[in-house]
Image 1 (cartoon, rainbow, N blue to C red):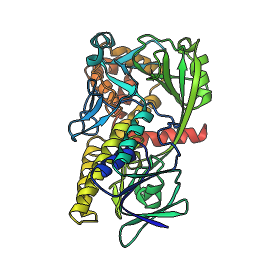
Image 2 (cartoon, rainbow, N blue to C red):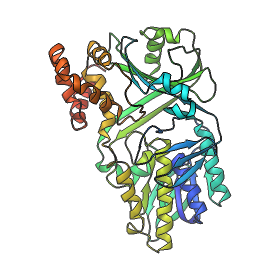
Image 3 (cartoon, rainbow, N blue to C red):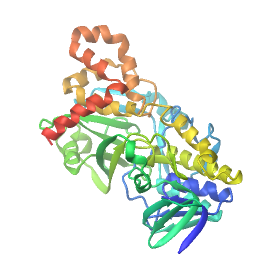
Image 4 (cartoon, helix red, strand yellow):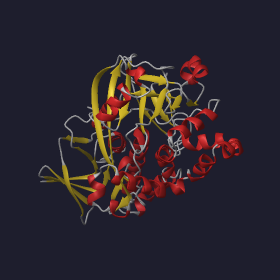
Length: 442
């Protein structure tokens, strides 16, 4: 059976749910197809951080309005209701492999005294956010169909046809919001010319009993295992679900056990209890050159590099659904009709920041030795500007070290040379060398 709509949306994550809500409110005949039976049940690893409130991110200066309980996107001009639990954190700390030396982004002691006004950002419940968006979509007349596994998509004379579970759904436009491992992007050929960096995996743990200095700060710690070719790292951030609960990520159970039992950070974890675990596997690619092809618009992680974040995905869903609404009103069911979305996406994502700046985190861990990392971290004595922006933090460290380059050149000339390699344009060369070593020493 063929079901006909103005718009077919594939994927009910933040981008798809926001697109459905927007399309429904705009009066479009819309269907939302989701593989999961309960889209609001979060089973995949996710930090659920509001990214980011500290500065401009993807061209937006977003923040949370406590009084009205709304996420505010003032540059793009929309808001999102959120009435679930949240928990503030007040700084980001990068810990060196010695377990003591750290770089601080934001002055924790000053910020925590300011309360809401001093927070770096906060964590929240992604499931409640998605559930609220979907309910608003349903209230606006959107046909939300769960348990539908989309297996095919093709251009037709009148638009695009999506197939799944034996049914076909035809829309004038399709929004692909099915995540970083997007089937829509793959079938439609969006990935054909994207550079492929390989797969990544992560395991995340919600745990209690975690003890570290300055409990309401996010932590990124580097560990150097004696038997490993490259350093490893772990994240710990507060959990929104309980005051004594934290979220931690590691790339494998083996690394989790090492971090919590044998590393220099083990004393932080001596009394932990793991409450639940989640995992994620993703293929990492460079951003798409253009998020439009044959009446299909990609949003969120399906078009970007690694993560567009929950906030970035919602921005994409909102913008794409509005672009489709205008195209249909102007009777332009083609690229020209939704050109505003493609132009906005390029400006807000690949042109706003070079995605390779994100990869400098891996470069940093790979090119410096344990001793060198401790040395560099020790040189940064004062808190750096408060930032949670992963495209910016390494650049902030480099900027802080610039006045000290003569000193670094005298004390550790090899470190000075390596710092010159820490550039976005050199990321791919460094990562290529890393992969060669990993293939020899898996």
